[in-house]
Image (cartoon, rainbow, N blue to C red; front, side, top):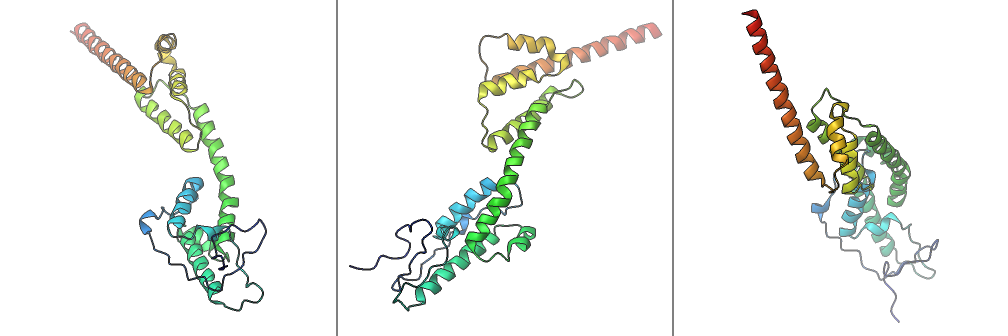
Length: 238
């Protein structure tokens, strides 16, 4: 029976993979079109997924979890070990080159790709959790004011909702509509109540159109009132 090539079977947890002395040097075809943007301490989970896919296209992803192999008893061929070390070296440096210069300087001394990957996970997955809490708090605390355009504030709220969705906390459309209505400023209380008592559910797009029309009407009325007031002052002065 022929020897099983290295990497075709998953070793048991905690076991050290044996080296097949006849295994060829991996032929890694670079696919740099899939290279992710450099990680700069933000959105670690997204960067991690992109980097994992990138390394998979290079046939290097397994070195993020494997430890260095040992020569099985009776085997003295070091070529397979050299091939493994070369591929592991490439994997480690692809990950390092996916970091900004500041982070590269911090992590360049980590010895292996596996240790590097685990160090980044320990550090930045925790920070991602903190980011989620921050985004949620930002959404809950956001309130519109009468001194600013409702449409501009609505855009700000949509950005916050997008950030929530990007963190994996998807808000369905009905909830988005209800929250936008609830956060309308005090001067819009009558229109807010009108929207809240509508039986037909609206989409976000429909709500945006209604709010834009309402704000345009309010601006037109305000402008008309200012013109009438100006005319009255002119008559009185005359």
